[in-house]
Length: 353
Image (cartoon, rainbow, N blue to C red; front, side, top):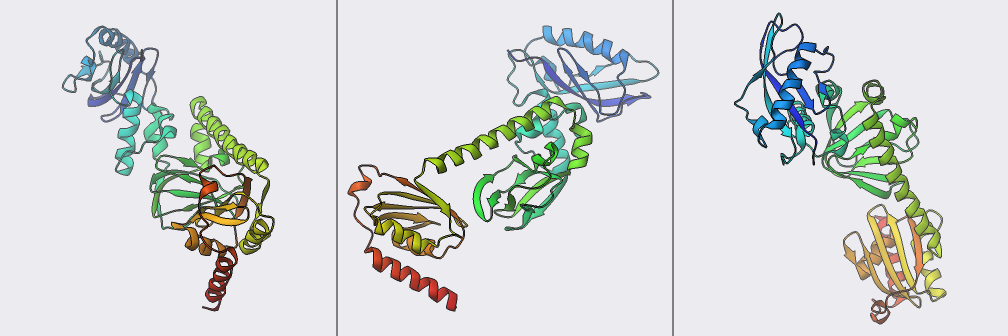
């Protein structure tokens, strides 16, 4: 059963010493969140407590009658408010009260909503103040947001498009709409351990690390989210290292060029899969007793993929022994030495051009 959670917007105000039209109030079964930076009115607390019991006793969705106005009992002034969204037991309003308030605020500040688990952890009562510290910035394809080895004191949320996480141009991960990067700067590691660049024209929401710390450094929900995110990313790194450990051979292409690597597998009649992380993405070549039987890279297959891989000079590789029974029956894609010579010839022609 979901806990009750309702967002109210102040629609009328007359001489209220604390609150203004447009400000939001968030009521739950245990708390009342007032606009950021505003004192809590004890008269309003009493009135909202009575309203809470009234709403809990009403039919499902009754609170979300936008035509119904509620008001405080008044002091020197008076406010009236309506319900924007609610989660009460049995209700199925998408996103819940706090989530709806955050979505409304994001749309108000930046023109559209974005599905972001991180934004959903922010305190709804402070959302306007927090979002006012974010800036929406556009980057062209290839632009670098975070450079490995350099100081980073910004946090980025992908608003539109995709970011690419790299290690010396080697693809590590893709970050899509709503995902976060630069969070390590909030955990004390302001030297970037990887590069983040735009995979296409992107829009991001950016906040300075100092502003983030002052606003949310002590927020338990936000810190828990960041800790979980860091743990998840560490697991992914450890899993990648485990795959490397299980491989019988791994290394970097700046230590051995692809042509020499292929010749080693051919001379020793290796059977298995050579997986590569290259500037153009993932590459894969299957060997059966040193012969080439399958290849793919950057949208190309077999021979053209081989030729394209031979032009690369940076990347990491790992070779895993063994093929499936189906792959053991696949025909060769061509004579090994002929393919190698043709590929090397194309590389030389590119250098001459």
